[in-house]
Image (cartoon, rainbow, N blue to C red; front, top):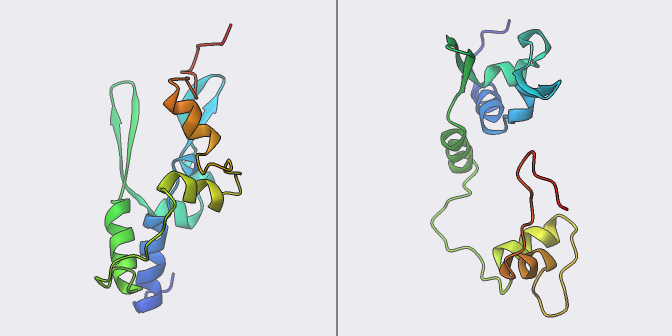
Length: 131
C-alpha cells in the first residue's frame, strides 16, 4: 500500500465517499435485501464504509458523509465561488429530463410532471400491482 499522502490521494479518497452508491453494498437475493459480501467490494467502495456493526436482525453498515465529501470536492474545484448560477428559463425537472435524454412536450411541461400534477401514481409501492 502506498502511504504517500498528497493532493491526488486525498481527492481520490473523497471521490470514493462522494460517489458511493447503495447498490455497491446492497443486493436483493431471493426477495430479501442483503448486504453484499465484503470480499466483492472494490477498493473504492470499501473506502466509503465508516463502520459495520452487528445489530438485532443483522448488520448495520454506515458510510462516511457523502454530502460533506461532495462539498469538499466542490470547494476544491471552485464550484461554489459565490457567483449566482446562470439564469435558466427551464425548471429543474425539465433540465434533468433533457440531460437524461427524455423528451419534453411542446408546452414545456414534461409528461411525467403532467401525470404527477393529475394525481396519477407514477411508482407503485412494492407488493402492489395495478389491476
